[in-house]
Length: 419
Ligand code: UD1
Image 1 (cartoon, protein in one colour):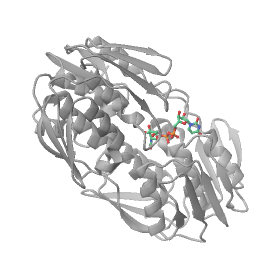
Image 2 (image 1 turned 30 degrees about the vertical axis):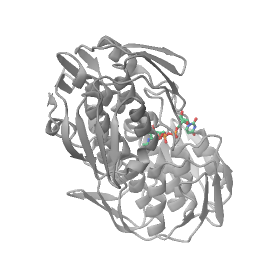
Image 3 (image 1 turned 180 degrees about the vertical axis):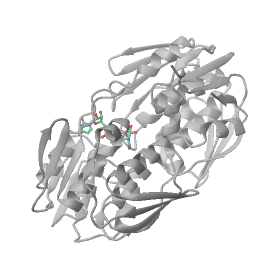
Image 4 (image 1 turned 60 degrees about the vertical axis):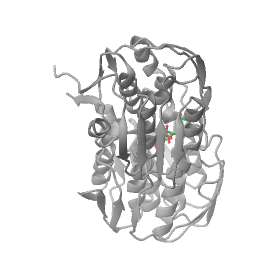
């Protein structure tokens, strides 16, 4: 049996220096799907070399498009007649593949997309995606694990009220509404910056979208869209992870090419924990405390504390001088990393969606399982501050969301290697 990929980190070095981030994973994946709405040649700029972009490239290739990389630019050629299908092996590999449903339905009047199952975060339903598309005139039938969608008369604009501001559902509906007949109004829409960036790209393609970044998005459907060029918004999760790497190592790190405003809540909580945080328009400078103060926080849709920064922040607070209480409001089952941090000597208990972190003054390195992207990142951060060596296995999860992670950490002075 081949051993899983692992990252080894030896604790004790204070990180120091500058690190630049690229475009957001959670934006570029959706932009790639959006490209399917218009035939021709699109260019996405500031695209990170991460595994999820490659997987979405496979999803697009299956539908008949071609993707070609040129440095950090991604050239996408979309055919006149895409194949309206996404197979199970790709949807399983990456749940964001489900986003292609709205785009293909809109473009082809039909789509066959395998239904994703559960994952480490629980069952992750897509009921809101489907309810909204149904309201726009789509019908669905589940046949042998494949969702067969039809909209023979095309999709039509309508008013949709989401019961939760789901990022994926808002995006799927936005993609479907861009070329639907009439006007769509999405209320209680997600307000994430990546979604706002998607609307900017769609508008460059000729869509008529207003209100992205607020809770009410209005989309006036247009007959057709045209290929466009777009620079992807910086990755706030990558930026936040490096800022916390500086903080947990009691070091001093400057993150470049980011949007500090997209991390307002996370940076505020880091300040309460004792970090010195300064920022300009596109950089963040963090000086970590010798030992963090405890901080309570609750994850919430944007502009609340991002659920994808929760494990990294808990790793930091595991070393606090006191007890922090965290409430996870987005993914009730996002706690597999807790047991791994406890193996390193953390004192963390979960109760339902709550996490009680009793700070300890030392962590000790060992082998831990990086069970998802952010869990793996959190465990590497813990390893930076732990005594001895930490080996994060299943580190390939890191590759899904962080380009050049080990090299960037090493450039800041971390003792880190990949096996
Ligand atoms: C996206 C991000 C993910 C991030 C999350 C929240 C991508 C590829 N992924 O995921 O990294 O953690 O936003 O910021 O961009 N839900 C339902 N029914 C639905 C849809 C969602 O019950 O139809 C639930 C989910 O199970 C979850 C919550 O709503 O508990 C939030 O999900 P959602 O905002 O849709 O997240 P994703 O788009 O899947």
